[in-house]
Amino acid sequence: MQIELVSDKKGLGRFIRFPWAVYEGDPNWVPPLISEMKFLLGEENPFFHHAEAACFLATERGNVVGRVAAIIDRNHINTHNEQAGFFGSSSACLTLPLPGCSWTLLPHGSGNATSLSCAAPLTRPRTTSAGSCSKDSTRRR
Image (cartoon, rainbow, N blue to C red; front, top):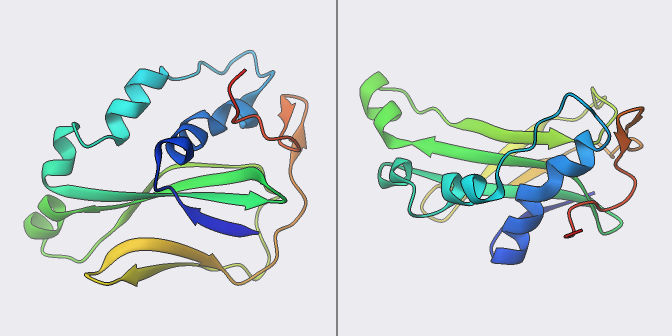
């Protein structure tokens, strides 16, 4: 399994569209508006005046199998006087829990989150009656 930092428009598109692979065929899933997700994750979102985020994709054999955003909110840190970070937008096509897997947020340079690592090998992709993550459904249809 590889963990990739989302650093361009193509990666952001794969990050945004990944839930379609997870929830494909689920009649109860209501997909988010892609334009809304681009705004929420983009520089024009006022949240990012006091916060920063790094988005990551987990891939296996070229297919996206998971995603997560690591978030640092300086307002929260200053208000609560604690060095806290947050995770969001997490989705995965994994058999969970992953035995022996501990996710580690690795700081880079100024302390901004830029990578995640997993100490254990990935188990096989989860397949449900609601869909399968065995193919990369993050590509445009």
